[in-house]
Length: 430
Figure: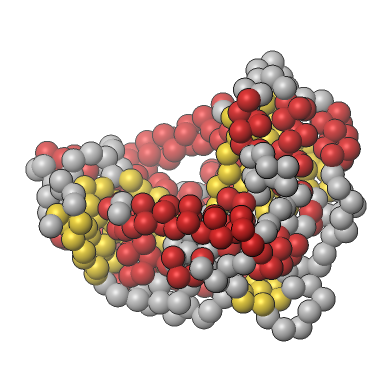
């Protein structure tokens, strides 16, 4: 068993890779009452075209299959729903689908191994029929319509459309009413058998456990399945330039909703970037976002005092091996003025350089936030799972933090925060 330790947060991670390819990570948290497990597969909404190991021809499936699978796995052949079974034990279970992975999870204080029985049973035993697949189309169709009526979600999706011409990140994770109509049980089984293979999955468990004991319990519940080779994922070529500068629609909103997006076109060359460089860049971007328009920034104070921003903006940097983008969003009576002031502030930072005192203060605050993540086992588990599928060890963020100095951060500012890569999506009231 391999161990990885962080002297900064005094945590030790135990890693076991089984013969079938499944990776299990255990993070013991002594005297912690809560227990948490998350089981993820490196399969998300972007993975709609791929070559199955052992085959030569590409398989292409409708948009929304990964999300559809996530919904269907809870339904069992005996007529029960595993979410209801776990809930009856006092166990809080859930699942989610992202652009690059799907995850199943539960947390509890008692009945962990009884919960693990049900949990590992439904993830390993899909049950799809013509009838239950058709029924699910209606349920997911309602979910798609609900999100289509959500102003913040529409603003986000329109931002993705502004940023990207071809990348599937611009498509709704759930698909469309039309795309899910083409999903049948054969498509679901094909994608399940390809992507829900142990060699494409990670299980992360956190709580007051002896690592050897809990790994033994997991092994006892695994069905026999051989690992497969690497799945070749096929994504369309994406130009480095943005798709369009601006998008605006009308919906029922009290105040306009906006998102400013910035395309990180360097991520198109991701295979050439080291893991350490990815982490350093991520840290630098978060520092810059907080300095430029975070809650302690001069720009945010000005926008708030002028009544242009109703609250602290949502700021984020999202990336996978094939795309990367920054989003800055919120509500404003005049979103276009927000964009003008944001672009002017970025230009001012690039011209005048970073203020050393602000840089140190912001870095210290962000580093403290990184440390706090380790106080909650749910945060830890989801963080390690997400980073794992990007090829990153989460402890690396703590180790690389001191390498992100002002000179490096200034280079990232000039390299990523380019005016030609900034877009805006707005939803205004009717």
